[in-house]
Image: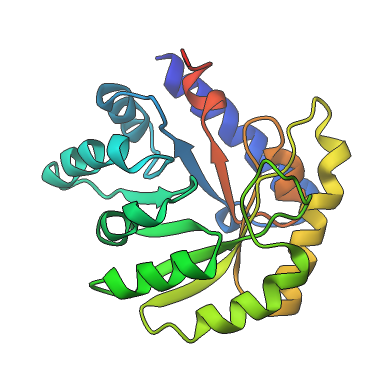
Length: 221
């Protein structure tokens, strides 16, 4: 099947990037981004060995998560998109991990609604793009300190969305800066890298990569 072949090719590229960086393959978790992808196609990816899936929108994610829960599959669901405050209650109770904590307000609401401790990553706007969410670099220390006080949130690391470029080498400094920040703060994970730049992200320390197009092909919209 094409998805199986895509995943096989992707795994080879991930392994080679890890080798170049002197890292074991097991340090990098591949998250298949399933935005606009139907359940049958996600099942194909699951059958091909993918057990981590990422969604951007609550309303689209819920039926997919419900379905795989009823199938008793070993799936981890990652919230990777911008999370609106009015969707936080649902997100707190359906996702296994949330990558996109981009404000103190959102963190507080999630903490209030959580029925169990939620693993989270703090989104950092490393490139200072006005079109993207995330804490500015100069605010991340204060944000981390305040969020760490919330009893129902478990800070696992940092996340960023790099600028889209044709040549991934040009954004290597973005990934490197986030890795340096992660090390300075003493957190574990780095969620960075997508279909067009994941290899550079891995070389710079990514532990989660968020890949859609390289698995499922170009989306219809």
